[in-house]
Amino acid sequence: MVPSAPFPDQARTLGALLRAPYRKLAERLYAGLAAGGFPEIRPAHSAVFRHIAPEGSRLTDLAEQAELTKQSMAYLVGYLEEHGYVSLHPDPNDGRAKQVRLTRRGQAFIAALLKASAAVEDGLAAALGATKLKQLRDLLEQADAALADDQLG
Amino acid sequence: MVPSAPFPDQARTLGALLRAPYRKLAERLYAGLAAGGFPEIRPAHSAVFRHIAPEGSRLTDLAEQAELTKQSMAYLVGYLEEHGYVSLHPDPNDGRAKQVRLTRRGQAFIAALLKASAAVEDGLAAALGATKLKQLRDLLEQADAALADDQLG
DNA sequence: CGATGATAGACAGAGTATCTGACTACCATG
DNA sequence: CATGGTAGTCAGATACTCTGTCTATCATCG
Image 1: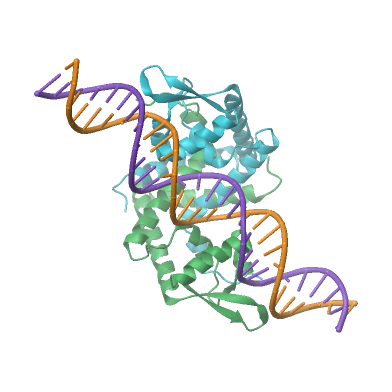
Image 2: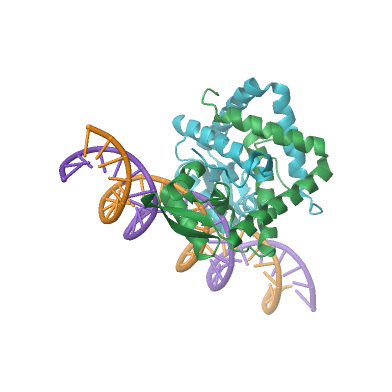
């Protein structure tokens, strides 16, 4: 028996409502990707894949877009390089900089990720209906935009 | 200039759509709580506060509800005890077990958290409209329930 | 063109949040 | 009361993030 919690359902915070499905989704997704041939990729690495440009990105740019420090991004990129998902090249226009580029394997991972994500969404569309799923997406975008606004309480 | 990313807006995964507002919300919330007198509480500690029963909970129960190992939960609870948010008591019915109870400070923190969360939601209601916020909450719950279902693709 | 300040990235070290494995003390059942 | 299960601890590892510091390179200005 689970005793009453101090956060009754009516009072579930929006944070809790956002976190719960996110966790489940991420777990499902990365378990599927691991089973599908990409076992070394973990959720944190999406910070790289989400922002890397097709023509290659500089470490500092990746860090800034992901809102991480350069050191943290270097840690993630180093791991991905070791495992063959990205390659590093000197930037011809800046002797200090390195370009991070996706390898074929990195591109294959992104394709698999998008496919796996679409599969989960299809399952969700089957459960909720496509209309509701679209609504959810739209509302999440609107909420995110509102939360990015510093005016907010 | 930000170069084109391989995840165009149309293709933003649901995971990305869930994570972005969650991160912003959590940052806003915990920054506010830190400023409001609870600087030592971090998001991970919500695993304790979310599940602890008013009459006290056993460590193992907390761990199970939060889907963490006993060791991880012990780590979080130990920190909260050090900082005066919970107290530990022997379980009168089981010599092996300990009850974790909220102190007044712990109760005050939960009250502040709920208040701060409500404030953010009010801001969001002002930005989106109360109807949309309610819809978002409902859809998140439905999506979470669907994701908990193992049948899902 | 050379000095000065800013930027890209690397190196060292730390802290948080999780895990696994092995252990002790206690409970429950036969 | 022996045997097996459960509650919690101890030890150690890993992942991911940070701060501080440093070198090499770039950009600008006199």
